[in-house]
Amino acid sequence: MSKHSPDMMMQADPATLSAVARIAEAPKAPRLHVTAVRGQRIWFKHFGAERTAWGKRLHALVSPLMYPRFLRSSLPASPEGKAARELRKIKAFRGAGFRAPEVFYQRGDVLALSDMGETMQAQMIQLRQAGDMAAHDSLLISAAKALGEVHAAGLCHGRPHPRDFVVDDNGQFGFLDFEEEPEAVMPLADAQARDVWLLFFQITFRARQPRTPTLALQAYKASAPKPTLEALSQLLHFFRVLIPLGRVAAKFHLGGDLERFMTAMDFFRDAEKDAAEKR
Image (cartoon, rainbow, N blue to C red; front, side):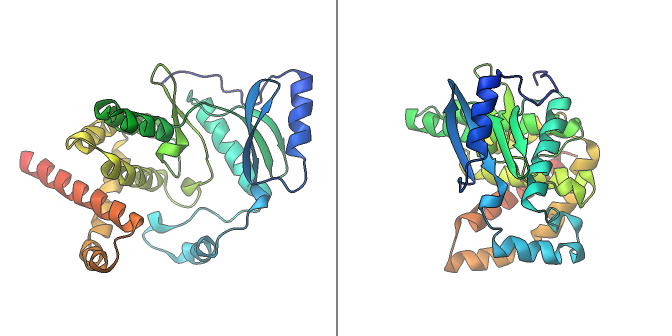
């Protein structure tokens, strides 16, 4: 982890800030777009430009009644509340020394954020096209390690995905798109356990070398908090009963989400079996 300034408000020249404000306040802007402003790429997020999907609304409605707690959704929020949530998490990550966007502008439901470079997902696509599967899978292992460091610092991403990670030329990870806050509705250990589970949906599905998920789990555990590992075990135990149903459903339609779930659960089952045999 590279230490970064906890300050999140960008110190830019007045002309740049004025130009950013004009773009941010433009009517009918899309929810997310990137624009070059005086030689800098800046991302604009308009949280009120997109309606919440009905599935998310239903999940939020029944969420307080759901048990176990790791099934719950983040608290429902207005567009302004969503912007405030993202700002809050950016501040927390930067305050703990992790790379996260700097903020050029914030007003109501609008944020203007610094560009952090290519996402991990974009880099992985390039590596697959180049046929460099060792470097491709090394990114997956490093992402798991980085998430372990985030959790050790008492933080939770909320929706870890290769498109939400960036990697600089020195291999240092950064984080963006903090639109989920599960730690506000469940114990931190449960929220972090869900982080791990979701990230391994991607790792086990995308890995091109057989040992990659195992090495990634070892990399995560190197710094992961013990309560989080215990919560992860409980989460896996709960979802294990759904594996037979998943296998039946897969015979009729194996969608992307179901395939990632099954691949991750099969990996965790084998990992737990191997760990039990070694004890």
